[in-house]
Amino acid sequence: MSQEPREFDAVLSNSLPPKEGAILGGLAGVKSRLNSPILEVRISALTSALNYGDAGIDLIIKSLQDVEQVQRYVIQILLHKGGAKGKQALLDYDPKLFFTTLQHWDIQTYNPQLSITHTAYSINLNRIQANKPDKFDLTQLQTFLQSNQTTQIEALACKMWDDYWQHDTQYKDFSNVMCGACDKLPNLKALFIGDGDAQEANYMKSRLLLGDSTPILKAYPNLEVLQFRGGWGLKFDKVRHENLKTLMIQTGYTLVQPQTLKDIANLDLPALEYLEIWLAESFHHEKDISTEQLAPILSGKLFPNLKYLGLKSSDYTDNIAFSIVNSPLLEHLAVLDLSQGTLTDIGAETLLKCPTINQLHTLNISNNKLSGRQLQKLSQLNCRVIAQPQDNGERQQTLT
Figure (cartoon, one colour):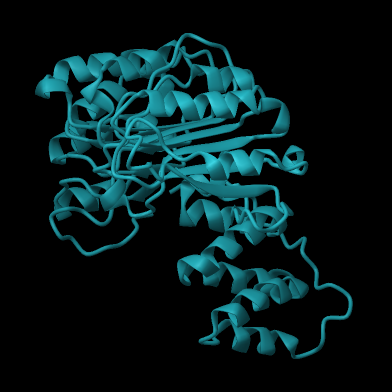
């Protein structure tokens, strides 16, 4: 494999000297605290580790393997204070962390009893009143928006918790509240809308009814991240947005309404770097039509700055592989994510025969249907390959 750095390779550096006042032998104390069974002690030790330069950064990087509560702090530290080494570690741990996503903000759970003191909050919605089945409770969101401190908010996660919405007026009500408050959120850069369950197995089955999100794009011109998680019904009119860098649509029902993909293709997003779409089952199992709907995206003409393309959770991943090897878009991508699909050795062979695949930084084909023999062949690619686990029970590993 070539050792020459490519565009998305972070260049390692020793530019993080220990801060003045670091106590000799103190690093051993930090190590001890990072092994504490007490969560709060481990989290506190992460900040202390910054006092010890690259050695401290190395300890912080190891904590990426800790529990989720600790991981959140680790990601924030490495993103903002980890330098090139921290950036490289995040890229190796999860390629999407290289890009602007919600994980770039330390999101706190909103408590209506407390003042707003952070720049990123999650808000719980959708506690439907029994006597009003076509309505849901927006009280917490409205209370939040009444604060005088909302002008400092940069990220907002609006989490819906009921199993499904039965009426499309519910999403319209939410959208109207958000759009009506755009002057209260002039610095909003990241917005999550959808199922609040963090368990993928659960939200993949979500029946949350979304809706037309064009007004939100128009109301928030500074948005850089827009993420949806839910069932079906997502719509867009043709609109231009100058600053959106990341668009994520995590759903098990994208192609129940094929119009969704057409709407995405009609968006004018010159700054878009990251596009993730969960494709789920093809419409009436007409796989040829499904790949045809992806053609505008794969043309490379729609989003000229796209570096991360995720076409995940598809039941026609082989067909996607056949299409993408002939796509001009592939020459510009840093990460291609075809995970959680139905890629077989046949589709993987098509990728292997495509020289342009080697220009990627990362190819993610985990959770597909690949054999051990094909995985070994994939390990010869001149890019980082995330190939495990596979649904056929192969041992988990990362090929490099």
